[in-house]
Image (tube, rainbow, N blue to C red; front, side, top):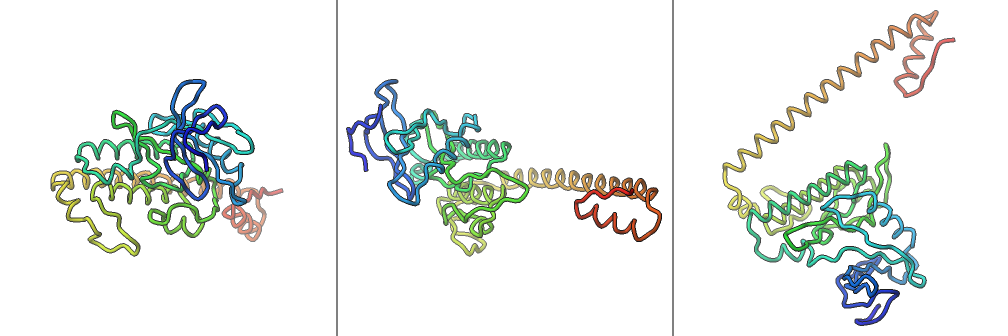
Length: 284
């Protein structure tokens, strides 16, 4: 535990912002650049690996976006790998506890979604979407932080059930995070932002806070959202139908081409089975 006014490398500790299972975040002053930063310092624990913090830095530096928190510096101070980040004024979790106008809440929601969409475009699954990981800056600017649990998406992705239990998607809790897991979590964050309540598992409809949500959003907004959702679903249906059609046509063309090279039906059937199983088998 670092103390207030303690010198730590080139930083002077000004106070503690938050403490988690893996690290403590301090408000600190950079004595060389004369700026204030948020300093993330790992805890002295056998379960804390420097590789985890290096992974977080490498993920964050891939994501250049106005709504994603920037890493200013990362280096060893003694035997600790320390991350210096932009210093905000408070977290979204703090802001939710006070009254917020619908217009301002919509602005914050738009920025949160923009940050997550950018991460997903870069094939990054955040895996720990929650109000505490959205940091507010002057001018109502919101930034997504803490990519310590983030995963790089592969065709098949396996991971531990890391994340925050109140916001975690079922498949992520079982160690199978997907892009949809982040969407599940951001849905709960936004529901809490607009209703002031966090639903608990198992979810029942109407969920807690539903009346306040209805009061904040009149029937005209509900109609607009339904129309937008219908347009999105129609577009997705069109894309899926086209993809299936193109896939079927490509298989038909492959069968016509391949059939010419086989002398008997059994060899031809075997080739099709190998092809559908993802293997290329060409006649000799």
